[in-house]
Amino acid sequence: MTSSTSNVNTSASGLASISGLASGIDTTSLVKNLLALEAAPQTLLKGKLSTGQAQLSALQAINAKLASLTTSAAALSGGTALKTMSVSATSAGDTTAAKVATATITGTPIATTLDVKVNTTAQAEQRQFTGSATTTPGWAPPSRTGTFPITMTAGGQTKTFTATSYSAADVAAAINANFTGVNAVPVPGDGGATNLLVTAPPGDYPGFSLTLKDGSNNDVVSGEAADSGTTRGTAGRDASISVNGITRTSKSNTFTGVIDGLDLTIAGSAPNNTSVSVVTTRDVAATATSVSNVVSQIAAVLSDIDFHTTSPAPGTKASSVNGGLLAGNSVLRSVSDALTKAVSDAAAAVGATTADTGIEVKSDGSVAVDSTKLTAFITKNPALSTTLLTQLGTTVNTVASQASLSGDEKSPTTGTVSRLIAAMQTSNTRLSSDISAWDVRLAIRSKTLTAQYSAMETALSKLQSQSSALTAALKQLEPNN
Image (cartoon, rainbow, N blue to C red; front, side):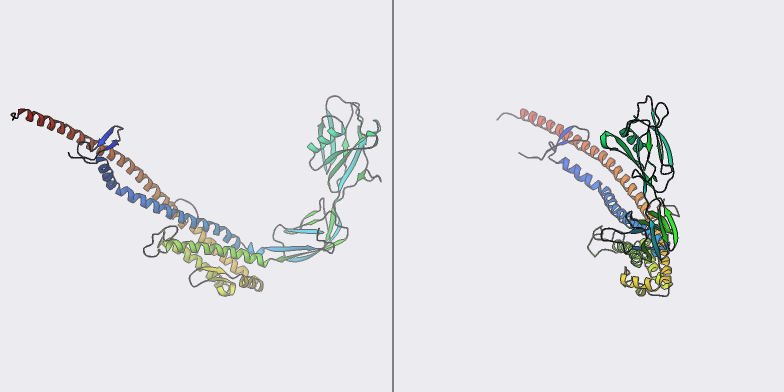
């Protein structure tokens, strides 16, 4: 008996058939192999898409670094790095726990020394309010129906609002909710009487008052005057300092713009007539750090470009790990050459070498910073440093911008690397569409082949049945032995 190979298969139409039942041929495997041959173009497309996606990722990473470099170089070209200042504020009254004054740089102050004397510190005005002469001692206002209006003047402002009642607690709650910068606290006294302690913002403000009226328009409370000589009132006071003999006042202990770009804050506990020396100097170390950051960014871009544009070793496939994804790309090579030239030209612009400035172009084309040399060059040559860093920042900013500026791939204003990215995205989209079209084409082809071989198996089965019937009929015609 002859054996045959058969497999159960479900066709694209959803009907089950037995592969090779009549022919002895594994038609399922045959169809699969035929489809694999016909899918060869799609396989090539998938390979191209995989490579295109890896190339796109490499380009986007380089472009992101170029965009970041654009920002850093712009700051350098604008002279921001050269204007970095440091400041100190010292006094004989300083302790390890607290300083008499703290200076804060808010802009670009000039390098100078300021002799500051603390005349007075700011003080908040404070009033203690109690029941008026028409009420019982302490806070015991008479009843009132309807609303409970409050009019208050503090910190140079007058506001009118309402309380839930005229109890000390409700009046305090209303003040705290409606008057920013003012704090009200009920203070119990002897015999159950309650007073209201109200503190205004620091500074010398006239007219501190609190007005509450009963149903007969009588004052419900009275406040002790700040200058009454009692302990129930404290006068507000402005802070005052002398800067090189020039008097400055402030409502708070912070003095804005002591000089352009510099604020000074006096400790609230600073004694009167305390002297403070404020010194602003050019922060060369910070400038060198800013330059080093820019050069480090340039080095990172150059390294990425070299890695992806240099062909990998023979027998090694280009990849994000092995490099070479963008081998020989002239656009990226041009960007690399322009950045390297920007570094060397900056030194030449001031009649120096890269070795003099500490911003070096090495023999392999990479760039690096010798911080010690750079700091020494900036310290010794402040004017030349300004030219050097402005030239470097301007040129690098131009190169990085012309490469990374985003936009349409056909726009002349779009950066050269950005155009490569846009073109690669278009190509990858087209490849994805082509691959999807092949999926449809192969699905149709699979259905057609399956139907053809199913029909063949059916025809062979019928022929085998007919053959068997003819063989049986012939046997019946044979004479009996």
